[in-house]
Image (cartoon, rainbow, N blue to C red; front, side):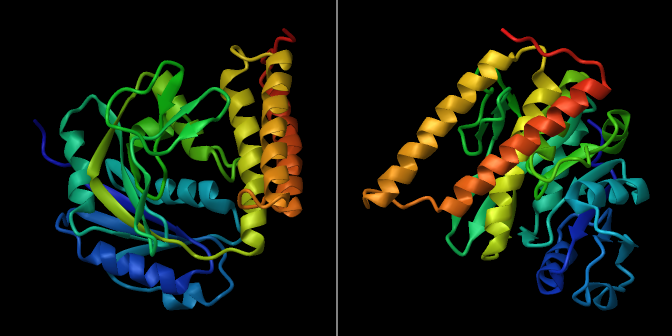
Length: 302
């Protein structure tokens, strides 16, 4: 078995200097010490750039906001590590996080390792052994073991790592995603023959920040990313008719939830959320179909 590899920990950040300080404090307490920290400032406007500047980490400053996938790619391009590990600025790692995350890399056949996420202040596990299917359906918490047939393992990038050469070989993260770039990159790695494993002893704590408008934007980007992910990666397994059926089921499900909220039998879905999701779905299909056209990939009608 080889020793643990030198790692680059990449932290994308945007207008969260207080959260970032807490994350960096957690990284400074790591039991494993053979790593570098790269903070990628995604064109923050809250004074984050002025708050950065420490000999224990490097800073990459982006002149325009490129979103999380673009910030991660900028970090990978600046990295020196054999392994690139990712954590979000609103997460704090356990003291042995990186040590546990790197342990499986002693097996040279492993190209990616993902860990577990616990949400604070509600104190529940939000991600453990996740998997995704061709329609973008995600199972975020499941028992350890193989994914069910038709599902693929994937990581969330607040607690994920990859061999840098493997990530570079598939073209890094797709910057046209805002959500679903994580399932996308994992499916592409798997199809390129790379092995991905979970290490649930590698734990980070995600400090949820209340949202407002961000929550409505979230539903848009999730709906958009899900449709782009499906068309981009599974056009050979999907059909126009199948997607129409899929959307009909989604529409019926959301309609029932909306009606249940109106009569008070369950928590209501706001009209703004429904509209945001519908707009995202339309945008996702447009983005996915544009990808298929650019890459000359077919989509069956039946």
